[in-house]
Length: 390
Image (cartoon, rainbow, N blue to C red; front, side, top):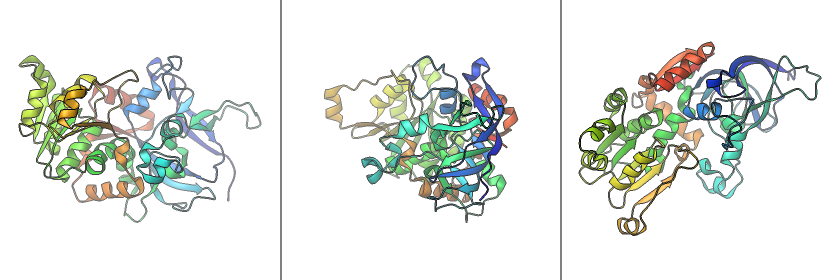
């Protein structure tokens, strides 16, 4: 087995991208460990979490933010090399990359692994993987670049991934062009659809409201349609996203700007759209506190409000104790759609192949050399889910 250092390119964040501190760099990868996989990347989806962790100064005390590092956590590619303890993939296998987990805590042993007690540390903090090629190979003090972001750091042409992040999709008949398209399945689309299918287990008796119609929210809309939900209500302020939600399966949409300009009764508008009683399941994919509170109030008795969008660390939700007891509602968080990625990602691929998960309407591909254009498109909202391709 060739043990010579792998030289590659990566999009390196040395500080906030809005300060011009992201750049393509030549890098060298360290040797893989026994529970790791070397992957030649094909593409990576771009997620708002990448921007959160890559556009925040590291002196603000925000957890999970540090530099220099390589971000990216929605990857696709081909296995080049596997560690001695890895058995589920072999060189040449096509793979999709997702989150990682410890596998040994009490949550991992009983599931869902997305709520691993070490989830934050091992997904957001990662560890050293890359070295700038400008550094001397014999320099023991050469500066390292953080990797293993969500177990993968997919913004690199070659990367080292935690074996638990690697989903083998060999045998599904996927071409390289398919891998380019499917790269975002590892986080945003998995989170939105999985919250409906795995967490809520929504069905024909449910009225589902989705707050925030980015990639996560629109994936939830598609999954709710696949689940045959009675009403599917999309809530947002961007007309193009409301129209897209309609196209993807929403039975009703609520434009928060129009409600504010007329009656101001957002809660009433959501209740009316959800059968008059309010949703049985409300999924917040916005992380915007006023929308969360509207969902809390609008949800019918015995309904569930599922927090998926990550608000700022100091954001809070106030729940009135007596009313909460009387109505029997539940408010709880869910991470990554409670997904067993080895099972769920292939299921999503089958939906897509059957025409039941038409996520192509959300994406646009960019060369990795055009990463600045890709980021700008997501910030401006002109593209829901940019994909950067090597």
